[in-house]
Amino acid sequence: MKNFLFPPLLAILLLLSPAAQADISQQEAVSIAQRVHPGRVLSVKLVKSSNSLTTSLAPANNSGVYRVKTLSAGGDVHIVVIDASSGKVISK
Image (cartoon, rainbow, N blue to C red; front, side):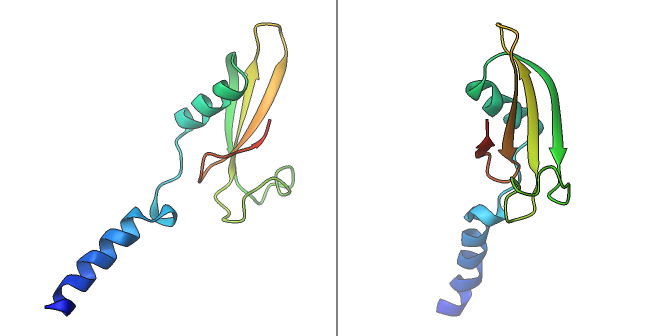
């Protein structure tokens, strides 16, 4: 009986683990960036870790980062860098 329950339980645990979850979407990255710097979104780019511009900011899991450029009501341009896997703000 124990051997019968183990595989399904293991599968459920793997599906619920953070490593098995999907990357954040572009729209989620925009929402995160707008919480940090409200304003109009000028551009959104998914940049993979191999790019030399983001190598120092890229997460260790090689998922890449979103670079979201916003324009504030006062005319300031901000670039928010977000981990594409976790949604964590890396740079504001």
